[in-house]
Length: 245
Length: 231
Image (cartoon, rainbow over the protein chains, first blue to last red):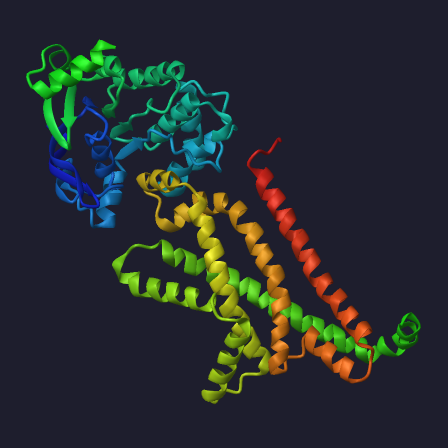
């Protein structure tokens, strides 16, 4: 039984249609990898899901609840169950690492501060930043900032975690520390939608890989089939280019 | 010239004149404070209004923009006359100080609305995205995320405006409010040397405006350093 059902999702930037009828089911514990060329709409799926780029057509259902993107309360209920990690980390620049992780659970979800702090410290230790609690984002490397962003997302206790090209802005040598963190989450059974250009990583952690082009899903299937035996010419073309270097 | 000033000084700084000048200085300070404080309050509200996107508030948003664009573009004196005659026309017997207070508030709100808005806009769009995705409402986002980052952008032009603004309250003398400039004219008409009178007025303006600039610098420094507590 899928938790999240996306059907016929469309989204536009001005007059440009960037998503053109996306159907996607996400079940509990699923790790779905979204791949495709730049501009194919992978990131827009995630932004549309959380309502940052509201869909113009189609439907999104979470646990049987239909989401109405024109209704703030409905979007708020949805956002309560999802968390997104951005390519550019988007950490709050005016807050320390610990404050970044604690702010939403304490101020928005109104959970007791002591309990949240304990959890935040544990999460930051888990992503390997237990010694950076009082640092500010601009004092950290990109990889460290991205791990703080992941801890911040986890502190929301999301049912589904959306990762939007989380390693794309990082130096190559910092990529692995972030990927290791995500690997751990995958092993723990976290439900995730992962947009990434790290093909080896996608192949390794995903249960299902979705290949997109020009706002549409071209092909989907288990990683081994998509990467080793794609049936669509467009997928074959993309995969062969990727694997050549 | 010096002999004349020294000779005049004791009679100029008589008990009566000093009280008169202090009262005038108080009027200048009061007009400035009303303008700055209410201007910050209404200016911030106008800037917040501009951040909204809901259709129901659209008419208010457009009125706010219209107001801001108009009152930043007309001379202070014209605003003053406008309020003065509007009050007269309505048959209201608001005292002249009240007319001046309303005028300074109208002007300061319009200017500060733009300064605060520019500060809000200086904060990167991705901070809004992150907050929205974590279910922050608009006011929570401004309070916890945007304002703490926008302060440093808002403070220098805001205090620059306050300093200009203190001088502009002199125009209230045109409708007979007894503030520093008006007091200067009165004492000059009484026959005191213009150099002595307006020199004193200069010192008075300076002693109102200088501490304000220092306060601005202090706040800038404090807010700039609070983000890196140890450095």
